Image 1 (cartoon, protein in one colour):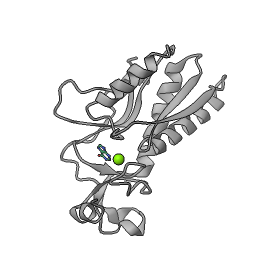
Image 2 (spheres, protein in one colour):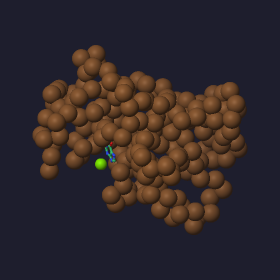
Image 3 (tube, protein in one colour):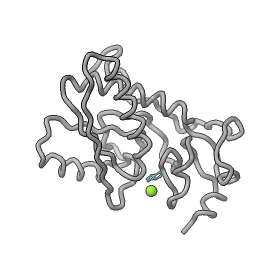
Image 4 (tube, rainbow, N blue to C red):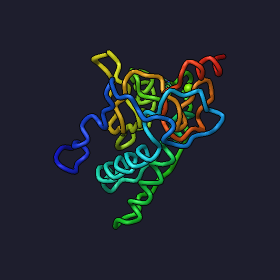
Amino acid sequence: MAGPGGSGAGGRGVVISDNWPGYSLDLFTYPQHYYGDLEYVLIPHGIIVDRTERLAKDIVQDIGDNDIVVLCVLKGGYKFCADLVEHIKNLSRNSERFISMKVDFVRLKSYHDIVGTGRTMKVLLNTIEKYKPKMIKVASLLVKRTSRPDGYRPDYYGFEIPDLFVVGYALDYNEHFRDLNHICVINDHGKAKYRV
Ligand code: HPA
Ligand code: MG
C-alpha cells in the first residue's frame, strides 16, 4: 500500500506538531454555551470532513470486491463513523459497483474514544476475529502521540495529534462538548465547570 495516491502515501496521516498553537476561537462559530470554556481550535470541522473523505477513498480502493460491515465504537466514534460511511457511499455511487454496507455499533466499557495505547482496540479485534471475517481494518480519526514506542497504529487514521485532551466532534469531557463541531482543547474554566 505505498506509492503516490495509494493509502501508504498518507504515512502518519496529518501530523499536528506539539508546538501547533491551533486556531483562535474568534475565527469560527461554535455553540454559545461553550463560550469561555475552550482554549483553541485544534482541528476545524471542515478539515475533519475533508480528511475523512480521503480516508474513505483509500478504504474504497483497498476494499476491492468485498462488502463492508462497519462497526462503530460509541459514543465518541459516532460522528467520524457517520461521515466516513457517507463518503464511502458517495464514492461507491460514482464507481462501477455500489459497496454494500451494514452498520452496527458497540460500546466498550471505559473505552477512550481515541486510539491512545490501543490496548482496548486489541481486545476488540480479538473478539471480532472469532467470527472469522475475510478482512478486518481499523479506522480512527485521531491517534495520540504518546511516549509509548509500541504504540498501536490503526490501518487508517486522519490525524496524529499531541498528547492533549481534546473535545468536540463527538468526543466528550464528562458527556459535554459532543455537540461541538470542531476538535478543540478545553481551558481550565471549562474543566472546572464540567468537572464531576
Ligand atoms: N478526549 C476525549 N476523550 C478521551 C480523550 C480525549 O482527548 N482521550 C481519551 N479519552
Ligand atoms: Mg468519553
